[in-house]
Image (tube, rainbow, N blue to C red; front, side, top):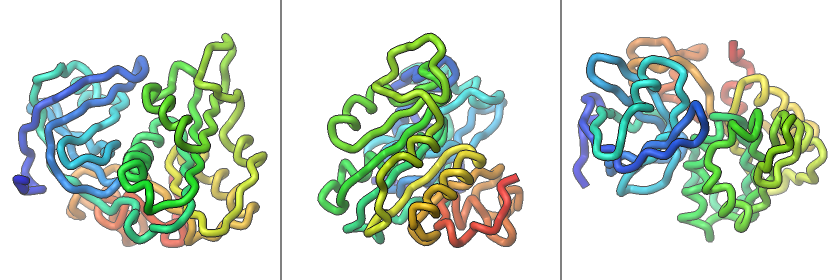
Length: 268
């Protein structure tokens, strides 16, 4: 496996483009690399710019990136086709420490585009299924039109204890057996034991705040909870300081943190 310089953008081919929702898509890219779930790469197009994007797969033959169109770079990426070239550097950051968590039951909680890095965790578990116990997943979306990973949801439902929620479904659309309401309500009603259980959590800051509160009420400790933090990560190796959280660099010390490491930090 060729080892690229992680500081220099390298060209890679787009192997597949799949439109997930009206404003998000998944790219399969020819980067062959060893990485941990939760790490990210810096993706760029010449003359347009660069953006950090989480890896949402577990394969050494390629990587997948789920991208939401929110700026110039991501809108330009949405125009790519199979066979096109983009530039990437990385992977960067600290991911979910899967190899240290063997033998535990897993509780995976994701909201919106925060489900993307968690898909890397799910793929990893599928590739190392005997290393982990029971897996429960709670995935929340704003509406049926915002559901990403539709193809994967069908398989996850066959394999794991999966609860999908949509904040609202005014037109009664089919949505993968989802219940209408916030993901926090589903968690409050769920029977969850904190015994030998690790939580992987990613989503909007306000959603994570309330989820952590519910987990505390159910007896979970801070050192059982791993979250993925969001900050502006321009350089990705601790030089620009835009992503600093009270002495910690999100791009190097994170983006995945055990909650007791950053629980007193504000997300605003």
